[in-house]
Length: 138
Image (tube, rainbow, N blue to C red; front, top):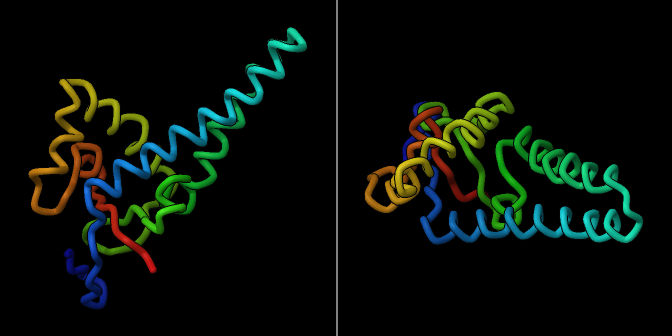
């Protein structure tokens, strides 16, 4: 559990297993969007539909990033918040966390992700990079 400086709010950090499952759901949703449009693009021999699939799948994720979550985290009632204030991460911090931070976390044998298992605050390197934690919401 994390205690926020803002009003002494106590937030329950999400378990590593729940976070992994949310990541898995993110991959499934993005994969399904890509698959549907790629099949339609291949059937019609349209490169435009294939490119559209990439734009739509990333657009869906970015929409959720504006809300401080992802598709999978939203489905499992989780949110990414600032560790110090308890407020949801904004789009820019989510973008940095999701693209740069997760790239760094996976760079060396995925140690940045494994770090979640041993860290007291259940933070991966991508979380530490932007001072975030993943919490359960009601």
